[in-house]
Length: 219
Image (tube, rainbow, N blue to C red; front, top):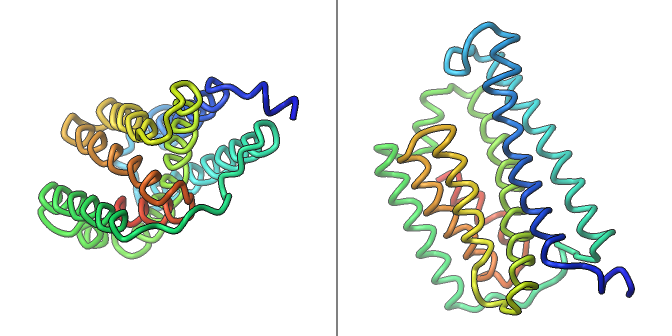
C-alpha cells in the first residue's frame, strides 16, 4: 500500500511520453541508421529493405510496450487488463459514428479504400508485413492514450474528460506533421482524438480499445 500512495500523475505521464518516444525510434531507423546502411533514402528502399525495417521496428516497439506494461503493473499497481463494465448501446452508437468519420476521411484522402490501395501498391508480401507493423503501432499508441488518461485523471480528479484523446492527438498528430506532411498530421490529430475517445466509450477495456482502434487505423 505504501507504493500505491507514492504513485502520481507524473508517473503515468512519463509512461505515456515513453510510449510516444518509443514510436519515435522508427525515425532513427528510417532516417539515420538504415539509409546509412542501404545507401538510399527510405522512399527508394526495395521490398527486402522495407520488410527488414518493419521487422526491426516491430521488435523494438513490442519490447518497449512490454516493458511499459510491466512497469505500470509491478511498480504502479495499474492493471491495464482489468475487467470493465459492459458497454451500453449508446456507447456503441457513438463508437460507430467515430468509425464512420474515420472511414469517410480516409476514403477521401486515399481516393478509395486504404486497405485496397495499399495492397495494390505494395503487393501481397509487403502488405502482410506492413499490416503486422500497423498492429504493433496500434498497441503502442493505445498505451499513450491509456497512460495519458490515467495521468490527467490523477491530476484533475475527473474521469469523464478524454485527456488521453488530447494527448494522442497532439503527440501522434504532431509526429506525423514532422515526419510526413501537414495533411497527414491533421488527419493524425483528428483520428488521434477519436481514438482516445474510444477508450472511455468502452469503459477503459483495453482489449476492446485495441481492436476498435486497429479497425479504425487500417480503414
